Picture 1 (cartoon, rainbow, N blue to C red):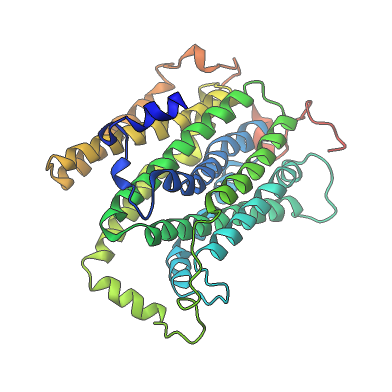
Picture 2 (cartoon, rainbow, N blue to C red):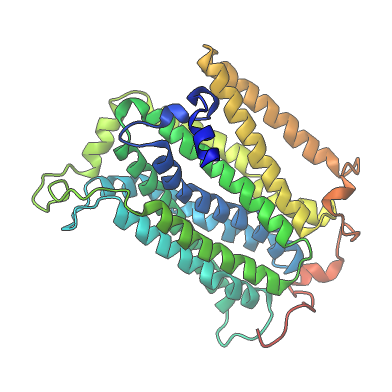
Length: 379
C-alpha cells in the first residue's frame, strides 16, 4: 500500500509515455494491451537471432536454406494492409472487429512454435523421416505459421489500441507500442541468452516450447476485456468500401507511396545483416549461443536509445531528414565495426568465446550434419 501511494504521487512528467494515457485508455490498461508486442518481440528474437545461429552453426544446416526459412515470415508482411482492412470491416454477430484477428494470429503463432523444434531436428538429419524433404517442408511450414501469426496479431493489436485511444493521443500510443516491441526483444534476448548459456539441443526444444506458451499467455492477458462489443459496427448489412477504394483514399492523404518505398529500402538495408550477424559471431568470432543471442539484445537496446534520442530531438524542432541522415551514418559506422571485428579479433571474452576454429572443415560443405551428442536418438 505504501508503495502504491508513493507511486501515485510521482509526477506524470517523470513517467515515460504517461501522456499517452487518457480517460478512455488509462496507462495500466494500455500497458496490459501492449503485452502482445512483447510476445511478437520474443518471436522475432527467436527466429532472427537464436535459431538463425543454431541452425547454421550447431545443426549445420546450409546457410542458404536457413536464409530462406528465416525470410518466410516476411513473405506474409505485405498482407498486413489487407489484414487491417479486413479487421476494419469485419462481420461478426458478437460485435468484435479486432479480437478475432488477434486470437487467430495467436493460435497460428503458437502452432508454428509448437511444431518448430521437431521440424528442425528432422531438417538437421537427426532421427528418421519417412518422406523425402519432410524436414524442409515441416520447417518451412513452422516458420511461415509463426510469420502469419505474429503479423496478424501485431496488425490487429495496433488497430485495437488506436480504436480505444482518442485521436489526439494515437501517435503516442503507437510509439509506446513500438517501444514495447523493442523492450520485448531485449528481455527475450537476455532470457534466451541466460537459459542457453550451456547449450544443448533438449534445452533448445524447451526454449522454443516455452516461447509458445509465453505467447499464448501474454496475448490472452493483453486481450482480456479490451475491445467493447459493438454489433452495429460489425453488422453484415453495413456498407463497406472495397480494398481498392481504401487504398485510393490513403494515396490522397499525401505522398504515402514514396514514404512506403523509403521505409522499405531503409528496413532492407538495416535488416539484411540479421541472417548473418549471429552465425558470423558463432562461426567466425567463436562466440557461444548465449553470447550471440545477447547481440540481439544490444541491437534492440541501441534501437531504443536511437528512438528516444530522435523523439527528444524532434520534440525540440529538429529536422526529420537530418535525423534520418545521422541515423544512416551511425548504421554505416556500426556495420564497419562488425566487419572489422574479425580481422582485429575485437571480441569480449566475457561474452563467452567457445574456442572453436573459425572454419569447421570440408565436411561442413558436404551437406551432412555433425553428430549431436546431447540429443537422445529417441527424440
